[in-house]
Image (tube, rainbow, N blue to C red; front, side):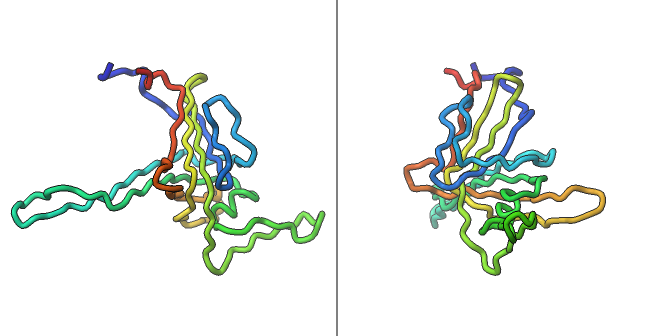
Amino acid sequence: MPGMNPNEIRVAGTGRILTAPLGTTPPADVTANWAAGWRDLGYTTTDGIRFNKKDKIDPVDTWQSVSPARFVYSDRDLTVKFALLQLNEDTLPFFFGGDGVTETAEGAKLYTYKVAAEPKQDERMLGVEFSDGNVIKYRFTIARGQVTETEELQLTRAASVKLGITFTALAVDNAAPLATWIMNDPAFAK
């Protein structure tokens, strides 16, 4: 029944962000393990994750009316913003885009990541998971997207390094959803 129900208030108490190559199988429910290929990106800042859906709607103006006669949808942006706290072979290439980390010589324990002179297409899948308590779990997946913006990377004596990222969803095709939510939340039962 619609109305005020405190049992439908959700707090994303714990969660994680994962990434995978395009075409990797997303989870079919909230209890299954993420399939091989999904990589957990580790700790994020306490700011958590910010979702933003922005539709651009253009008015169709007419000579006969001061208000629009109708609206035409011209654009949809779906973005996920977060800041990663760990530096490793998954997070640094995700932030900068492109090639992976290489070991300079076998057994040398010296690694190299080269930031490309020109941007490269680095499309991936993105998964977000959070739990509210021990029972309710949500999973959100984007089947195709890419990092479209990064925040200034700051190195200071008194704070951890933060890799601030904006990940933007891209259409797979006109029939596929831009993103999918899966949840075992009883608030959605009819």
